[in-house]
Length: 220
Image 1 (cartoon, rainbow, N blue to C red):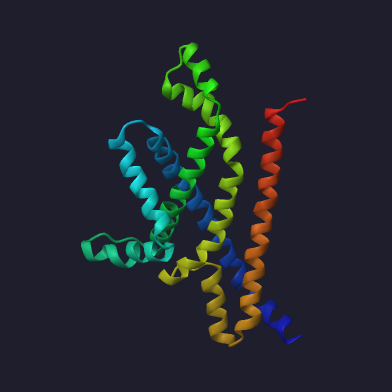
Image 2 (cartoon, rainbow, N blue to C red):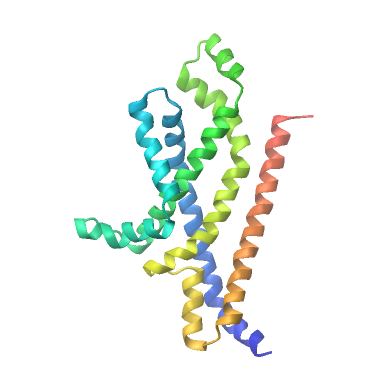
């Protein structure tokens, strides 16, 4: 009963933090897509001068911890005169990190489209960019939906790291309640349950999106 009363009193603060968690994750997902798509295209071009920087970016983001990247952006860059607010720094770090993983998912999905699609488009007079935009990309996105959804679910959990730069989301909200109640176990368990429920929600949305795309691709 004591735990139930505690969770009832903590619920408004934690749910508000969960709302911020979702907002940060969605903003970072959008930023990651805006970064990941051009990076994926650059990595597929036969021009090493363009592909090499994209390769270095992906390797750097995937090869270093997100926490370190966040510290560099929020605590490190001010030493050279570049400062960001906690919200901007958190979303920027999450976007840059997710952009690297999304670029690989998109690159693999674009590569999975049959070469015949390219050849047929070229025979109809479409150039590289028109073929990519109108023919290849719609098919690639259908293939990439599961990987993109997994990235979004990972972002839901990764937002917990933005608490280290004083950005209020679910984890920091939970810590603030713990600081006044001195009851870490039930509150951390509740936070874990909220993260899990959010993940289940986005998994369900992923399945719906896949079903709709499959029906659109294979009409009866």
